[in-house]
Length: 308
Length: 314
Image (cartoon, rainbow over all chains, first blue to last red; front, side, top):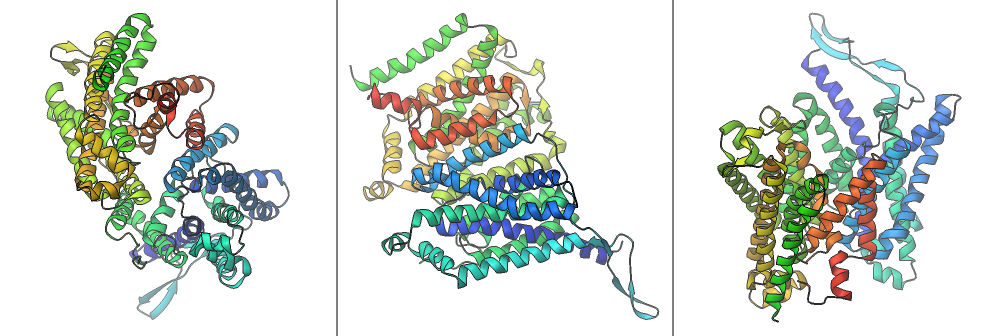
């Protein structure tokens, strides 16, 4: 393949990473934005989404699409409820103290991950996509006869991969409508601005916090269900999404949902492209150092405004 | 009896107990204890920063690995003998902690935790990237013939035990002394109320930086000693888990107490040993303990002891 088509394929793969990453990172971002806590166990909620999706699809033995749709609905809800239980049992009891929350969620990370290891096992397990038609992609060329379309060998994608991108965009739009147009969104934004004032106006802040924590975890699980037919479910798969979400949330500006989405696209695309042309390890080193230096020298994020 | 003498007696008593233990317990347990003492040095280094200065780092594995690889690479590629290699390990940890400290101290709170985590992650990945020299995840073995310090073969189990004990003893007494000095008291003042410490005229940033350097260097010494005594250096020691362990040990034993790190390391090591006999998911215990400690006993075992029985515990 020539360089052009090669880059095209790399950006397409990058777009899928970006789409899933946007969902996961927005989950982390709203939890941080509204509750002011960093959830280190976020990657494990992602992993649980994928594992539950495998579990549901392997139980529904008829058409793969049926099991997948069931997983798409059930997995995020189960994970969300589990997160709300964690919020009730742990986070609420330490009053959402930022540092103690990090230590507690590190503990939670190991509990979720190791429980999965004990029940689900150490193997990676595949999930069949609901539909998966291969589409050859055209590439343009300026040959002797002028402009021409060709179909280079190897330049192709699947309908499922395109559907993942579409689904992620749709979910993010729904989320945006909820946050900006509904009463529930209004309550959430009020809690974000000033939780004490919100409490004084009769908003049940504790319930809002539990709901937000569940919603954040549910979004991660949703991203995982979408990506699991491409990636396989494994008990250690939460590490990379956690790291990448961290990177995205910090670069996009802590707590800013719009910034998070822009950064997810940026990081997802460049991660895909850098990994193709350099080693993935080097790509990760650059990304982690970038986060560290952004936090040191520009704590409001690359797109955020400085705090007053 | 003055407070200082009482503390000295307590510290010497702990060391005497550890010496006596060698003659009582079986070889399997003395091997475990040698490892625990080296790791307790790491935990004490961590405790100085977390327990006394109040800075929670999630990247101490980087300092541990700097010492380990400074030592190991100097032996493997420069042909250095054990003593100069130890010094190189110590200096590399000192330089790395000074640089990281200088950068990370521009942030505070949650950002400090994430910055240290990210730097440590970048360090781990760099070790993997430089796999030609470091042998990456696989690591490398330090030859038995090279593990000799001052004519004493440290690969032998009894020599190893006492080498670990001496190292632990020096660091234990050093920390015990350091936290009694003006410097140590200032660190506690910064932990308790940074604004007030600043108002009283202390240079907070300089004190914090010094705390990170001492803490990181001690961690690096533990890393180098581990490679020397157990003959192995590998990238696993630079992973996130090894940044979490000292936090766990210190939280369990009691942050801000001199004997806390030792207690926590002993308990945790045996707890993990016992659980790993039953299941490969032994980190489950670590996770549960982290959650339970944050919920119910944020001051750890020594903290409970200090509150209930011995209010003078250093």
